[in-house]
Image (cartoon, rainbow, N blue to C red):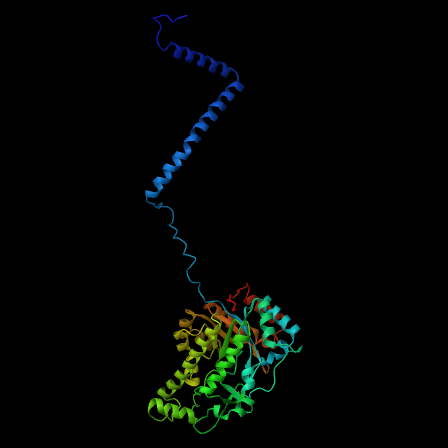
Length: 447
């Protein structure tokens, strides 16, 4: 039936509105119907909005690419993290101890060595310096020493094993860096095979004396300016570097020369040729001191370079006396060595009874300078066979070094708890408290 002409055009819309209001009134009478209606409306709206989200995201991303990032005023601006490729600081905390000839009964026995290194690991040490060149003899099978007529025998462990190889293997097993220590440097006992076989390698004082009294007794000195002496010590070091998986090598205050020496014929002729004058009679003459010290520096620089050529990752470590004494009395310019960049690690021997004297030495400006460049530590005397050191002094000196950002190393292993007024347990307890948490050192293993 056709609609009457007088009815409005939107009648159907009007009728639909009435029906919708009717349905709504019916639903209000039933809570269940109303909730169902509300759910349908919400679900339909959600679907509609979700279909629009991708286009909104694209628009937001496009805007973000051109919109500057303005930091909020109430929040700190966090700088970006540095690139991973930045160089890592090579300075590491040193917690070391020397294994000396006095410790030979320990490190020649595999079981005792294992127990010793496990104990050091538990006490959070991270570096050991086992002696390999002492009294004119190598502590490992050395073709160089044999051919020089310096060593007609070979040091072996209690099971006939290579002592140095065993120390390195067990040290690495206990996460310890192992740096063989060429303790005697240019020093050799007067009656050693080396001194007897090569008298022309020895230097002397102006009065003709060829020995001096040291902590190691009466010794002769190999001439550090003589090319054959330099060749011998270089080959000895490179032999060890080539044959062992060591982490570093160390030289102490004996890779030097007492200032009273250098008056042998070879050295006097060399000085005359280079300086066009006679060597001064005064052992303290600044030019004479500087000339000899520079010769030793040049040798150490060449040695470091050759070691790095053989194994680039080997740590070149030195443990001299405090600088003024080292340079003026021993012709050992270790500060110059560090400044020239061929030393990787420094341990300064500060064996003092008086705390104030000790503090003045470890606060020296040259130590502050060096510790900003390379791993630096203070060597502390923990005792001798005939001179016990109380743990209170050892602990106090170590804490003061650590408070200045310096590492520590103890001379020597047996005296850590083998000597002293306290019990072994008491001394170990103090060391455990000193190194309360691990401080592993990381070394790049050489191929």
